[in-house]
Length: 195
View 1 (spheres, rainbow, N blue to C red):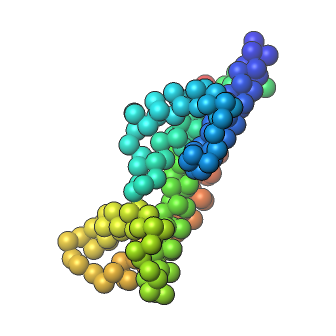
View 2 (view 1 turned 90 degrees about the vertical axis):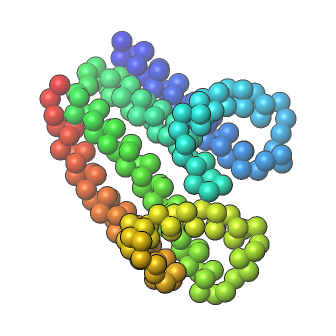
């Protein structure tokens, strides 16, 4: 039985690699094509499309639905590897893996948001040409994010744009750092729970 679990975990690892390759290729649009890319799309797109259909993880022009699908497969792979190694698994271990997977998604999204807002801050402070396509993408992501964060911090009160931007960046970085300490601590406690 352990051999089957190890084989399934390895198969998921190969599929995860194919998903990563497909996602990277999709960034280049029509520049990368051919039979291998079509075959890769036939193997990976149904899975990625299912996650896009079930979740709405769109932030401006970016779609993070594939991240949830990858995290789900990573979680399944870790569970299967644990079963292959020890032949058993605890509920605490599954909960710890689930919690770390959730934190991985949240940490990734927080990192993206911080980078986007820092880029927006740089553009604001240096008076960059915000009408270029690059800055339009940054604005399409940063404006809804800033609106939501400013509503949390200031309520209905209207604040200075720069102040709202700086406070939003500082708050996201603080959450990111705090989560980096709290989540590993919680998962360490959970993984010790008996079945």
